Length: 279
Ligand SMILES: NC(=O)c1ccc[n+]([C@@H]2O[C@H](COP(=O)([O-])OP(=O)(O)OC[C@H]3O[C@@H](n4cnc5c(N)ncnc54)[C@H](O)[C@@H]3O)[C@@H](O)[C@H]2O)c1
Image 1 (cartoon, rainbow, N blue to C red):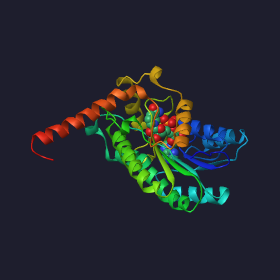
Image 2 (image 1 turned 60 degrees about the horizontal axis):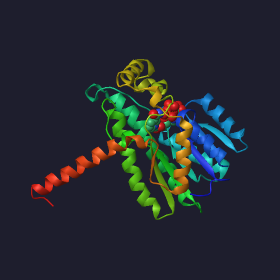
Image 3 (image 1 turned 30 degrees about the vertical axis):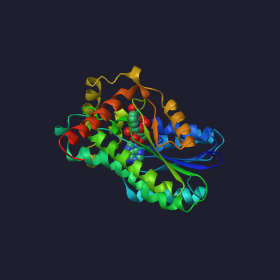
Image 4 (image 1 turned 90 degrees about the horizontal axis):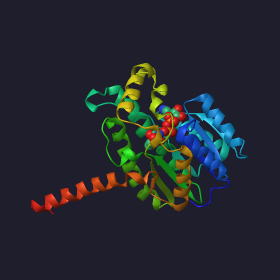
């Protein structure tokens, strides 16, 4: 998607972190932006930042895990802007800790936002986007955790592998309609993700119970602030990736060796299968 100016973008999870940086970078490229999040005050502040850049900015409160809410987001976008050319399914949350200790509610919350949220975006927006003409694009935010598995983040990893797989298929399915698809796979970024449980609904476990877990595990896993990059760098990579129609948007090439190691293990498994007479 080469032309961004005067086109319309929708960004979920845009009240802070990567989503906010993305909304502002897209406004700087001349896009009108629908800024969507569960955090009402912050979402309006980011919409105002978009408007202060001379573009149209609309803040809408949307819980992406709720199908009806995402449908309403699409409906409002079409009503107010006449369409969406760039959909960024970015909202995401994390729980940490060893998999055998994770609860049903952990799974429900994280898969609800990270996977169901992307599916809801797809279901609500893509049929409408198919009716538009011209360049259109979808960006799904996964993670480096959608490409390699780290310990203690198994629920998150499951959700992000799913988003990568979904995006790889979507890229093929929508390519024939002229709609591009990218999957964003960042490593560590300086955002509020480690306080994700601030938005965890009471009926899915609430914030207080989960807080200690996320922060203490992040600390013991050695999450080092110095390793984290600025969200604006990620946003710039997304703008370039959308323009170039890249399927994978990688922001931390320093993790190349981890990808190579996984690939080598898969190739070795093929060698093993061949040596056992399979083809
Ligand atoms: N920060 C990192 O190191 C990192 C690395 C790889 C991938 N990511 C991914 O980037 C995306 C953005 O996360 P971030 O790091 O900017 O974190 P963040 O917590 O700063 O931003 C996430 C935003 O999503 C919103 N949100 C939470 N639940 C929501 C819901 N149900 N519906 C709508 N919005 C909701 C939050 O209010 C917040 O504004 C996520 O998908 C995350 O998994 C982050």
